[in-house]
Amino acid sequence: MFDDINELYQQVILDHCKNPRNFRELPQCSCSAQGHNPLCGDNLKLFLTMDGDVIKDAGFVGSGCCISKASASLLTENVKGKTKSEAEQMFERVRDLVTTGKAEGDVGKLAVFAGVYKYPARVKCAILSWHALMGALKGEGQPVSTENEQT
Ligand code: ZN
Image 1 (cartoon, rainbow, N blue to C red):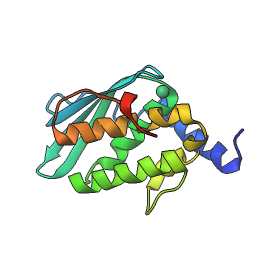
Image 2: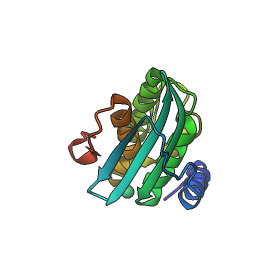
Image 3: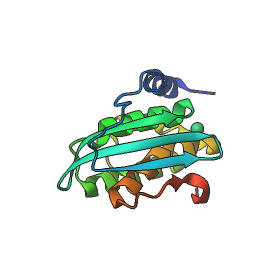
Image 4: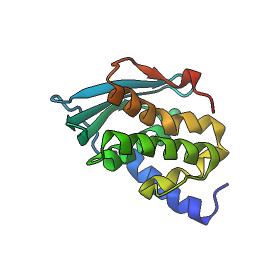
């Protein structure tokens, strides 16, 4: 099922799944958003601490499958120090990556999700935390759901 490169990617995903980074609430957070993927049962909450336009810190809590947790873990690592618009750009890239297997520009470690598009049921798991990120940045405070996601 997995070729060599995907096996390597799988290792990274498993690592982040078992030992999620930034797996904590941020009590002083500037914004947060809840993400829910009813298809899989993934539920997570993302917290951001902003300094003006820059994401200073990010954390998440919740439960879900390996892909959703690894995605949230890598997200929190990747968005720290990024501006709002950089994070939005990253969201676009990740969405392209998990739906087509390709992304424009550099996605760094997030490349590990390149194989996800082959498993349509997992795409929503991989993108869930990114929707939560967009929700938090918009400051709408509304729970986001992948239910209406067109993939
Ligand atoms: Zn899932």
